[in-house]
Image 1: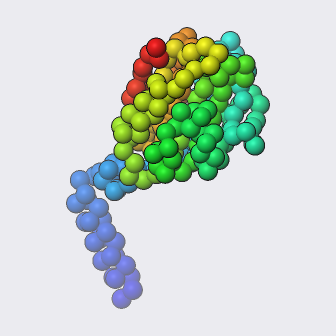
Image 2 (image 1 turned 120 degrees about the vertical axis):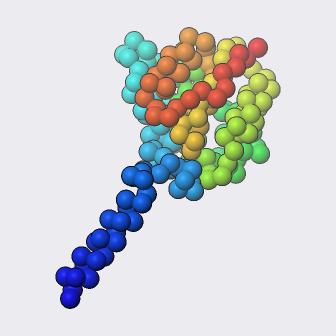
Length: 193
């Protein structure tokens, strides 16, 4: 009797699965959420830095002021909102839309290269977030020189990278980011003038 019940259940399961049209991996939208292959923002920036050639790398530090690391991106405590706004151009109205962060900054001059990666909270509008960051960075008053280019990259709909700096360094960063970040796409590339 048990054997017959098990066979019947297996037959029902096979029949149900065959009715799904053979589609085994539903899209993120069909699942009702935005899943990511990345577990944290630091992983995103580490992937990008790992794609740099030896001649492309630059001296950098990462993380927030209390937990800075040398020569690598670092995890950023997103509760340090004043530092996020002042150093990375994240506007106040976007603080509540992030749940994780990581940063990397040129060691000698932040205007040469400053980058951050954020994991957005579920339901955050990526385009509105990118627009707000763009407006904030373009409105900054620059001291000791001005960066050339702002780039904002959507990484699989859940993470966003914001970076600004010297035009050549930004091209290298963009090339490396798009080469290693699956589903990465530039949503903003703006001249800072």
